[in-house]
Image 1 (cartoon, rainbow, N blue to C red):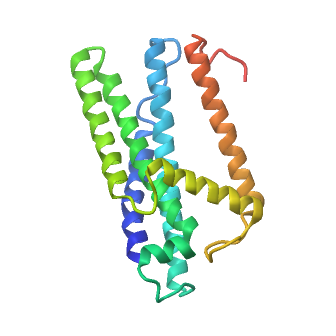
Image 2: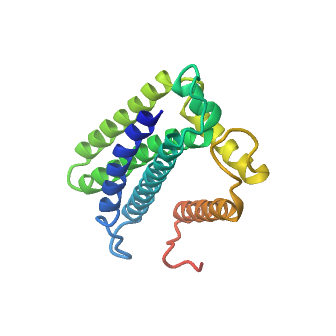
Image 3: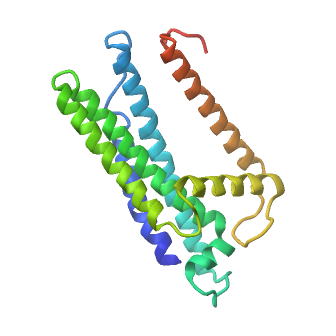
Length: 219
């Protein structure tokens, strides 16, 4: 179990470092570019920031899980580490599994958009080829992940179970397992801020498809 969390923590830390590096390398230029390029850059920023956040959660949760496992507060005679983690540390396990792949995928999305945006003007055929190549790679990774996933039907099902567990802990506190105490006010705040961010992203999408610039619209 310690090996699992350690194996996820190291690449997630590298991913977080890479995501924060690319986050500021494709700046917005209001009024000087086409609406399509403006949208590509905004989507790029969203996916780069999402990759950083998901990778950071993975690193943080993995470190907490390793510390908790080293304390010895778990069933040492469980049939295998996976069963033990799902039974006694479900929040840690699902958090790492869900956020790690999400961080990888959103990083890939950001790179795909940057490749497309940088090449579509001069070489549209190459831009499409690169976009399809990146899309194929990300789809293949997710497919392999789903094929080898145990105890869950798919990556989406894993995220659904994780979301239900998080909401359960926020509403009723520690119901089963040994991994966490009730989330409290900070847990509710994190969900509220995520809801605000999601709402703002939805508003940006509506404004884009309506042909309205977000820079000129009132908050």
